[in-house]
Length: 246
Image (spheres, rainbow, N blue to C red):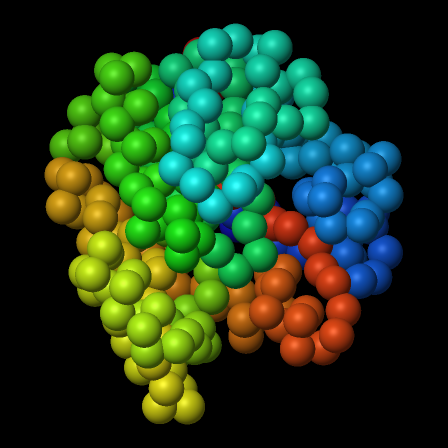
C-alpha cells in the first residue's frame, strides 16, 4: 500500500499488486470481483485492505459514470458492492470508501476539519461526464469546504501512454480542458490525471497531489491496457480513504 497524507484523522492510500493471495494473472492483491479471479480470494484481499485502513470498506461496482453513493453507516461496508457508482463519500467515523482501477484515474479527497472523505473513479467517460465534480459536490453537501479539501490523484495510465483517435481526443478535451496531449510515439493522447487536477482546481481545491505513477509502465500496478497487449487479463487496484473513529 502506498499511503498519502490527506490530513489528521484520515488514512488514505493506493494499493499495489503486492500483499495478496491471488495467483497469476491476478497476482497478488487483486480486489476486483468481475475479472475472473476466485471471489473468496478477492474477499480475503479486500479484508487485508480493510485491516490496513483500520475500518470496514464500502466497495462499489464502477461503470464509468458520474453517480455517487453517500455512506450512511457501517452497513454499507458489509457487502461486496453498494451499487453501480463511480464516486463514494462518507462522513461516518470508522468507515472507509474505495474505488477500483486498472488504468483509470483514482481520486482521493478529504476535508479533515469537517470529517468528510471521498473517492472517485475517473476514467475517460466518467471524467468527461463530471464524476469528480459530482463527488466533490456530495462532499460539500455533507459539510466539506473545497478550500479545505486535500486531494490525491493516484496511479493511472499517463498521457504519454494513452493513445486515442484524434476525434476522441478533441471530444474529451472540449469537456475537460488540459487533457489533450501527445504520446511518446507522437500520436494524439489524453492526460487524464492532468484533467482531474484541472477540474479540482477549478472547483476550488488547491491542495492537489499528482502522484505521477503510470500504470501502463510501472509493474507495481495492474494495467488493463498492458494485459490486453499481452493477450491476458489482470486484477484491479484500489484507492482507499478512511475516517478515524477518534
